Image 1: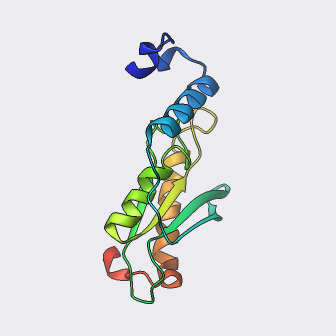
Image 2 (image 1 turned 90 degrees about the horizontal axis):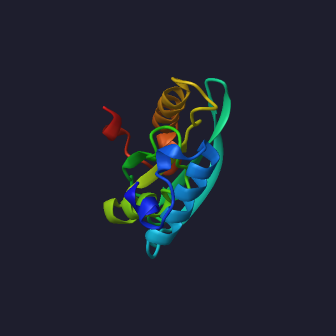
Length: 143
């Protein structure tokens, strides 16, 4: 990440994982700009292969009409980012796609070895398919 080195800091890959996460978190909140206004944001836990993990649901509008669902898996190479670092992006998708966004807070490496993040991501996909009716979502997107 050249932005860190431009401020005189070491490259991201040279930092301990906790410091790298803090740097990315700080930069993401400084660079995201104004947050898109959405109807509702809900944090909740769902069951995964080894226990519960978090998701964040974004709803674009109060509506009884079916809406598509977009699953959002934040960036960070399976090790750095989280729901907050990608909140602005999830809100943008929700508002401009007029879709329910399910943002997934999968387990991160190196604390959780491969394939933990992939397993959580797949569990979130299955959860979204199974619970689409709760959100008046369009199930046809899964077919």
